[in-house]
Image (cartoon, rainbow, N blue to C red; front, side, top):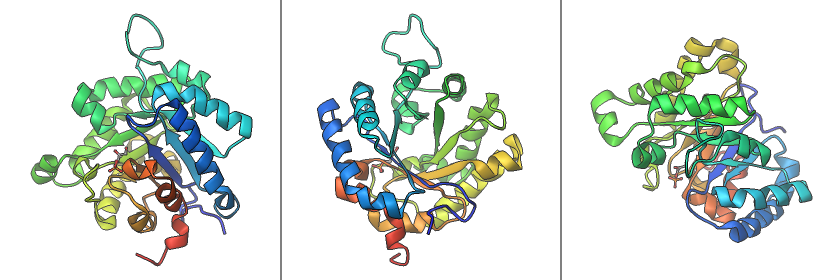
Length: 267
Ligand code: 13P
């Protein structure tokens, strides 16, 4: 039995570590994760597992993953829109590519909120990622206030449209729908709510990039994902994975999220 979604997209279960785990803790965690998922490798070969550690961990994670040939992908939590230059504190997508990062998160709500990142800047970051062969994981999502004022889909759809300004069909992108009110709150969206917004995001992808590119694009849900609710999200036709924050730091919980197929029927 393969783990592909009904639409043939490979599910992606990704852990965003945020500002947690230094490089030594990262090595220990990834080693244990790989060990825990050893059986899952056989049963769930088509589930892609990725972690997003802090920048200072990436070299250690890369060395571990490549030397032990682990089936775990990794990426940066952000990148600059610039490739190099006088931009103190920035990390370029070229540097991430040099460390074998497959992905980079772009536009997480914590970056939008605490660092004032604009849609225009995010379009630049996506272009930078694509220039260096790194797949952007674009986060979109509404605040509780947006939800009240504009309804569920308007803000995430507008954010997606703006970020896609320079993207053309054939350039891979992953979209993560993360309602801001659900992040770290313990209050996940219901799977129906999440599906409704993800369907609107997919319709936008069709409009901007065309039917084929939209059908190939993975849309993840993020916001208080746990082992107990992941199967409900994964059963939705337009949800192809999860971007997990807090629960991705708990080994058994994250492994159980990766094995979501085992709990189908329990929600
Ligand atoms: P939580 O899973 O802790 O709600 O965080 C979600 C998130 O922000 C992932 O990027």
